[in-house]
Image 1 (tube, rainbow, N blue to C red):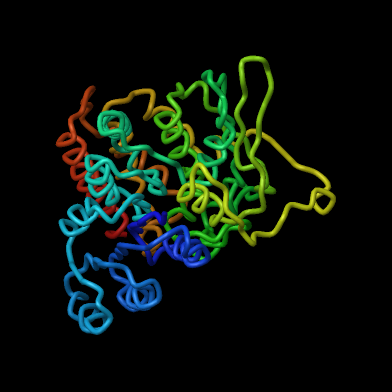
Image 2: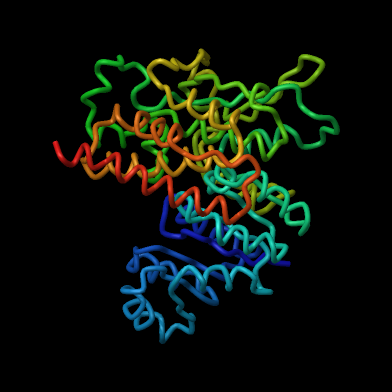
Length: 387
């Protein structure tokens, strides 16, 4: 029986690779829903290719273009976030792949969870901003959350068949494009340099997060909620070869690792097909070719975003949500040439420090915190624009 798939954020890096996975296994997957923010041309191309029941273009100005292009293909066209939160509840959909960028993925993910859908989670910000609430809702509705991030998929795979709780999670990090640059050199790096990841092809937001290593801080918080671990039980280790995607240490001292060449289709496919494994034409690991694997601690002085993330989850409440919002605004400002690379973590830290603490936030508190943090970050940016 084929599984009905909704791909939220189909025109992004994860979304396009998910479509590749689904089209390679048409006997396993039926794409029922595609959503995009602004990329109307690619959304139209994807819809014609996979023939979903419906698509959503959230930018209302692009609706007429998409609707006109797909009217003769029998694909229903909708616009707006409300359409996404409604359509993910459709009976034809079994799995919702949440690949929307940033905080925007939270609302449709919650809607899908409340509808009891399986979640293939590629939007780490959902758990960073509202981890406790999301995990609690998933338990209530019986909605499984299967991670798609390569690191969390690796941990998930390592835990298969284990009955007890792990002693420690070891999150591996490539180190990003600036692993060997000095703090002084980071002050003058360009946007193109920051977007040139050595191992992975990703969207611009996650690529910049990798360059600052905030990505690893976000992943630590995500792992805390996905696997019910304390922050102190999650260790970050730099592994430049990106072959070991993460490891799990057990109480007898043994460590299990998941390895493969860097290819996001693997964790995407694993999440969509779970608990089955399907064939994939990814390049196989040749250990003799690598010769050695390197591991070392991240330089937290050079990459303070990791410390900011640990401090945010230690404070708890709504603080990780504020941190995420501040980082999103800072990254966008860097990509727009408003602030230098070295200011991303400074803006994020300032937002965290200036956020009013809510110990046990409701969903309304989370949305209010996100909005307030973004407004505060925008005020901070005025200082840069005035220069």
